[in-house]
Amino acid sequence: MLNVLGMYPGDPGAPGGDCAGVVLRGSVLHKGGVVAGPGDAVFGLAAGSLGSHVVASSHTVVPMPTCIRQDPFQRVACLCLNWPRS
Image 1 (cartoon, one colour):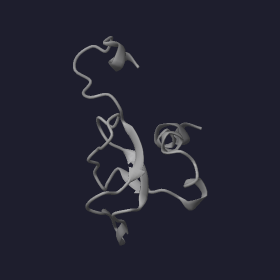
Image 2: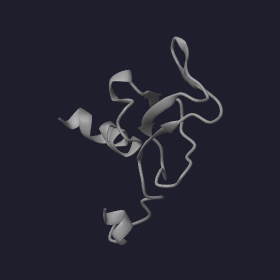
Image 3: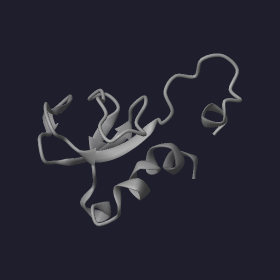
Image 4: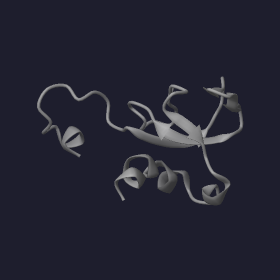
């Protein structure tokens, strides 16, 4: 919030950190191999993710569990920062 209001000291980078959406290109790779590819729903962390598209590292996104796929992407995106704190 401080970033968007212009009250953050220094350069915090582009606003946005948590994201959710559909893989358009590439794939999400983890230790066991490819876990998500084009058309798959994922959520995680990516800098500047308040835009309509974002480039994310496969180290910071995971496939969206089937139990939350019916939720809007906006709701799922907030899980990355809030779920570990609950």
